[in-house]
Image (cartoon, rainbow, N blue to C red):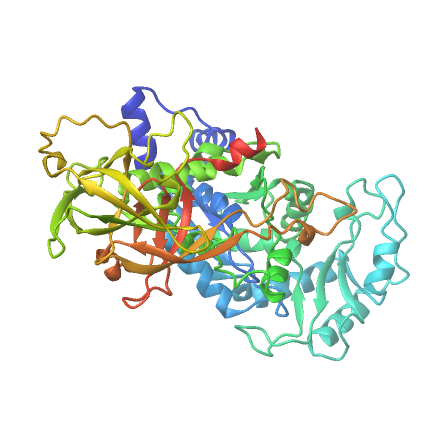
Length: 569
């Protein structure tokens, strides 16, 4: 049982309810289907960076292995040399480690290329596979429809000897890409389109990131997947729902290669994939966004990639908690991105140090405060953590406050600063605005205020009643910073769901606004990349990897509240 499950059981006094996959595993353990063994796997293709949908699958596969004292393998499904790179392999490993999971073994489908080819030869010898000369377009055309049988290839009746010779020729590079393909011989009239003589091997004369030029034919996913599970001894092969129609083929291939029909075999089970509104999950489309420079890279904080979320300031726990809240279902549905953002806020609220930052500064001069005087005000680092302690914040005669915290002609219930009005500076003094100084264009240049010496926070004897409290920074000690204000990358709930429009038409032009006029506390000069902060009254921010002591850079992780709920409500 994982720590999360233990915590929930202790909190409620009840055993957490089981999802359908957990119920299946517990039945299998009770019936000793695989003995006491639970071995899952996470099998990404290294053709892109992992995204939040993969995080759900990672949490499921590794989480189940942990819960049932089993193991989870990491297996790279590297059967397409054209799209796969070692860069993606390394990024996937980094993401899984960052999420807090450890794999029992690291494998590649390419580890099994020799065995897979031997099984392909076996199927040809059994009369269960043949080499087809038809083009991919012709094969697709003759496959038929769900209500109309396919047309058998004219090469389906080739002899075993000829098929073996042609297959070896394919392996030895005697034919060009697309010239021939090895197909399983199953049933061209099957109601399941995936059983209509599916391709097993195709020719791709491209160097592989691990095997180099050893191979020029590569197995298709359906031929590699189940057999890889079998080689590794996987007990529960968990896939998303789109692979449900592939399961009969998964089983058919295992049926052909197993000598003992009662021997161990892995079992495929499907669950609903994660779909989130205002988000796309297609790696092809994410790659387009990167290549067309709509974003700065795979780790752009607007991307739904794990690396992008990490850079933006999301935490591993918040993503794991989100995956648990979404749960495991048998039907696809769309999850509101607000649930993910809530999970992020929930965690950051507990761990983030509170600091002052002024995003849109307005200068305040305390006319009765001594010019050379400076004070340290003690600020609470995190009210959610009593062990977080306090920090000094410098106070002086000239301050910055937010422009929005002052109104020259305020409405009735405006409790911040106004001409003649009073407000408390958090951890500091009460001040009163006496004069509004404007430039020649009539824009407010600065405020002249007075402070009340007896009103210092923690020892206030002034007797002055105030209804509003605002944050501030000492102008002398404030540090200029760049704030990258991120919003959702798409303005439409389902950017890929419009048949007559391209998803790129819904890119949000305001998904990134760079604020270069902000100031932060001087302590943030020392912020390290991925350090988390709550800029009080503004939102949660994380130091970007571009940050430096000369120019601190912070990414908006998430606002304090869901502002989109107001827009859509």
